[in-house]
Image (cartoon, rainbow, N blue to C red; front, side, top):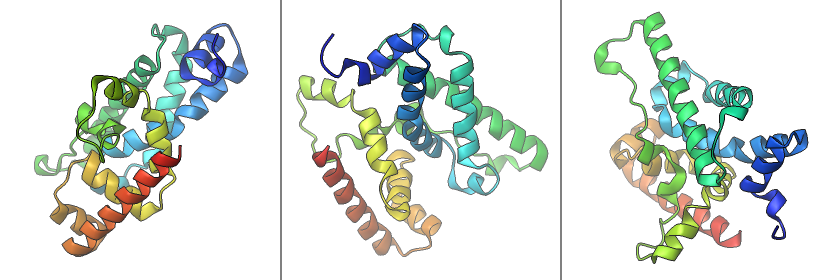
Length: 203
């Protein structure tokens, strides 16, 4: 076992399966920011007034706890994909429930995040478009690190990155949702990306 293995997702998964409650708690705590960021990317901003994203996160983590022994994978990528699948199902349930109770018109239906868009991996290569295959492999193992960095940004920086990079909204809509002019939204986004790059470089 390599040094620090017990602190990795794979190491914590192994220990949790052996009945180590502390490892299981650490595993879920390690993934909370990731689930929260993906949850925000899944649900359009207008729905947040009706559905608290934290409710979606809580439901997802509770179900993952409950069904933990059903998880068959052993890698970080498999674990995060499993969490995203649970979250996606819960987001769909939240939205169906909202439409049943509010009877929203079809034209206002919420858009679920595309799995490619709602993953934080869209943020991992923002500063480098010329990755080698080995660099891409390393990047795919940094999702939790990226999510933690995004979660630690200021609220405005975090929001503009989620809207622009994860939900893939045009700057006009980003500006409207954040109550800013388009130039101001673009400047905010540039500053947010710079802060994110700094945070990732310091890790």
